[in-house]
Amino acid sequence: MTAQLVEIPGYVAGTWTIDPLHSGVGFTVRHLMVSRVRGRFGTFEGTVVTGADPLASSVTATVDLASVDTGNAQRDEHVRSGDFLDVAKYPSMSYRSTGVRPDGEDFVLDGELSLRGLTRQVPLRLEIGGFGPDPFRQDDPSRGARAGFTATGELSRLEFGVGAATTVAGGGLALSDKIQIVLEIQAVLQDG
Image (cartoon, rainbow, N blue to C red):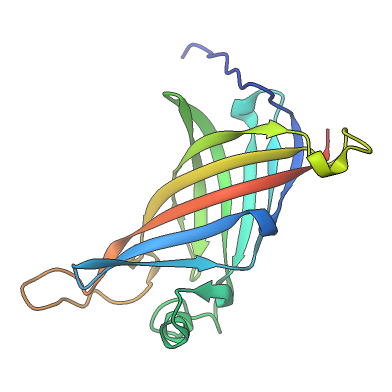
C-alpha cells in the first residue's frame, strides 16, 4: 500500500481534552416506523491525540449513560432502565479508536465501542472542522488552542443488547435497530 501524505490546514499535533461545554454527543432513532426521536448525553469526557502524522492520531472517550436526555423525563427513566441501557449495572459506555484512514475529503475513525459489557467495532466518519487559537487566551496564544471535529456513524442497538426487537402492526420494529450517532467535538490543547 502506498503511503499517502495528509495535509490539514493549521494542523497542530498534541494532546487535547474534549471541552464538554462546547461539544455534543447526540443520537437519533426511528420510533414506530413513522418518526425519529433525538437525544443526547450531557456528561462525557475524552482525549484526542493528534500525531505528527494525522493518520497516527487516536481518541478515547467515556459517556455517563445516566446523563441521557431525550426531552421527556419519563422516557429518559425508561431508557436508563434494564429494558435499555441498564445504567445501574452499566453506568458508562466508552470508545477507543483503533485507526484513522482517509476517505475522500474526510476521514474514517475506526474504533471499538463498549456498551452493556459488549465491545463492537463502530467506525465513525470524521470531518475536521479546523485548528486555531482561543481568542480568549490572547495573553498567551500558545495555550488554549482549539480543534473542532464532527463524527457521524451508526450502531446496532440489538448487537449491544439494548432493548428488544418489538414489532408494530404491519411489520417493522417499534424502535429501529440502527441508532444514528452525531458527535460535535471541540477540544482544548493540553500540550504541544
